[in-house]
Every structure is written in C-alpha cells, then in structure tokens.
Amino acid sequence: MTHLYWVALKSIWGKEINRFARIWIQTLVPPVITMTLYFIIFGNLIGSRIGEMHGFSYMQFIVPGLIMMAVITNAYANVASSFFSAKFQRNIEELLVAPVPTHVIIAGYVGGGVARGICVGILVTAISLFFVPFHVHSWLMVAVTLLLTAILFSLAGLLNAVFARTFDDISLIPTFVLTPLTYLGGVFYSLTLLPPVWQLISKLNPIVYMISGFRYGFLGINDVPLVFTLGVLVAFIVVFYALVWVLIQRGRGLRT
Image (cartoon, rainbow, N blue to C red; front, top):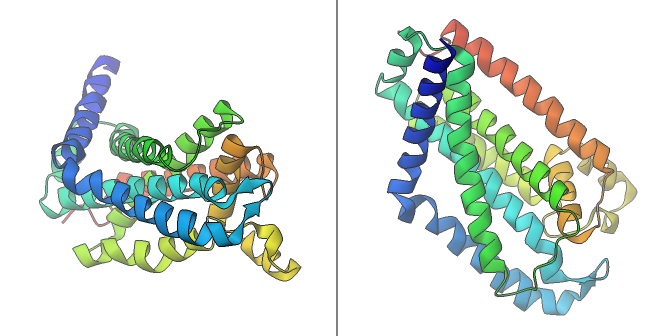
C-alpha cells in the first residue's frame, strides 16, 4: 500500500511540475522580468540616492526580500490556480474517490508549488548577480527559510482554492492580502527605520519574519530574532495544513 501511495504522490508531483514547466513563458519568465525591473528602478536608480543600509548597499539589502517576494507569489499562485482548475473541471473528484490519503493529495499539490517557487527564486537570484556580488552568510538559514516559506504559501494557495467558487476568488487574496503584506514586510526597508509604534505593528505581519530570516541567511542581519522566524513559519504551516486537511477530508466545496 505504501508503494501505491508513493506512486500517487509522484504522479501528482509530475503533473504539477509539468504544468508550470510546459508554459514556462507564462509561469517563470514574468516574475524574472518583474524582479529585474525592481533591481533596476529601486536598486540602481533609487538605491544610489539612499546609500547604505546596515553596512550594505541598498541593492544588496533589497535582493533577499525581492527573491522571497517572488517565491511567495509563485508558490501561492501555482497551487491556487492548479487546484481550483482541477476542482472547476471536476478532476479533483477522481482523487477524492481514489484510495489516496488526503495527506498525499496535499503533499502532491504543495510539492508542485514549492518546485515553482524555488525555480523562480533560483532564476531571480541568478539575475541579481548582474547587479550585486553574491554573498551568503548562512546557507542553512537560506535553505530552511526558503523551503518553509514555499511550503507555507503553497498551503495558503491550496486553502484559497478550496474556498474559491470562481476564478475571480483566486485573485482576491493575492491582490488585497498578499501584496500589501509583502510590501509592508520589510522588503524595501529595515524595521529600525520605523518609529517604535510602527515597529510593533509591523511585527504582526508574518511576512516580516520570513524576509528577516532570509535576509539573515544572505547578509547576516535581521530585524527579528531567528527563533521567532522559524517559530512563526512552523506554527503557520501546522495551522494551514490542519485546516486544509480537514476541509479536503470533509469535501468542503469539492463535492457536489
């Protein structure tokens, strides 16, 4: 039985990876172009006027945040669109009636989102080398933060897809929740520049912890303790996984 579950998991992974790889011009190229524009406009043009940030050039400071922003957006979008498409086309019903555990279904879709998020992250990192020298303070923290963040937002995309009733519902969360939280998550600035009250408010934003931890991996500087970064990531992953598991197990919005 375990072998059959492994075959099912690999099949879902393969389908998900093939899905975004087949249309790479739509899935991988646009975020790279967008991040390149950020590098040029914010890094070169505006960054030259801002100067250094914590002993690093402004371009070096924002690169980790921009990479993380690309990973978050793409991991989320891949799972949300893929799972909702399967639900809309009634393909998901085949998985629900098959002898496949809910954990395998979740792992399969999340694995596809993680794969796309990491692929985009690697591409954006490669583009950043044209603008700043490569600098890594802790490979372990880079890898752990990147992987946990991709898993978290893949689960968030899956949760959105379960509740979504139309394709418009897929774009609501990224537009009104993800984008504001990301821009206010310390991508373009350090929390130390904010007044104490706004620093406290900013720490209610979970993306602050992810970007801070990822920036520490590259530059060795962080706005919040690393233990909080890892704690927030693990806590949100556990909560989102439990929610998704319960909803899929009960067939919430999946069965007619």
